Length: 401
Ligand code: NI
Image (cartoon, rainbow, N blue to C red; front, side, top):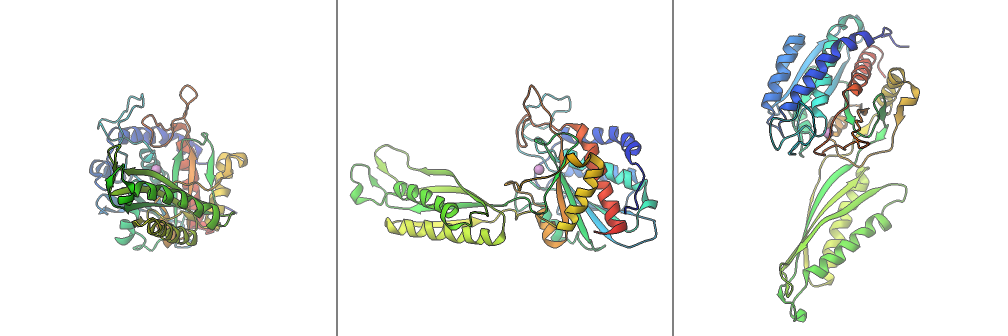
């Protein structure tokens, strides 16, 4: 049974204007990558005003942590809540008053909302310190969008210690989920997201005298087809993966056989063993098919973010809380997604869960997706994220999982 029984609703109603103001201000000053100096300065100012303890800045360039310590006698757990803060290199086209003031940078994934929600949660928890024991560690992260990502560097700089973190929770707004709905998934919920560059080296020559050349175009075409057999023939049919050849480029002229061809792939898998198998098969097929045509292939495989693997008990806690906050029909277990997310690095180190908060906004029947120049967040959804995350944190600290 929960030890947090009171209604948070009136407090949330009180803080929402501030949360929305924070989100809109952050939306006007998008910054990309690790260098989020203006964003971090604003978050720092807000954290000081809220009165949280032990603020640490400059972690992985512009990341931050801060603590909210409960005063209720009880277990001394530490739960970490994470918000990412970075924007994307997109020219904003969303028709809002708080449009980006920095052309070519835009909060097109909703990380402005994540940062504002975590500030709201900090405020809410500060007012309720007598209702939980242990410590909430707030973590504000730069550079989720660009691998290798900020999470990895923040972990290397020690954010999971001092105090030692027992569990981690994160959330993401979702433009294809209605307001008032929370989505979650135990186990693997996002994909290993990898990139591959294959360079096929042939021998260039005159287009009318192919017998004197080794054609890298034909070789690359056969490699592209052979790669499709990995999912079709090597993968367990109940598992899944994607291998997309997104770029296949060679040559300039009608009558010239080029020297080289270049292929760029994106590879998505869920399980670590599937990732290893796919990586090995891409290498074998590319080099062997090239050899069969008398060419060579050089394969550069770059591992991106690993799959988000949610702890089963922590996801059950999110589900139970989401059912209370949103109603059972709006707490939805979802399919795994093929997108990448660097919260996975925290989940490799500690149990926890990452969930999605509905912020679908329709404009003339269209809900623009994440990373679109017209992406927008329906701010009515943010209260559900704040309440769910605050309750998850307090319940974890008081009752565990
Ligand atoms: Ni995102």
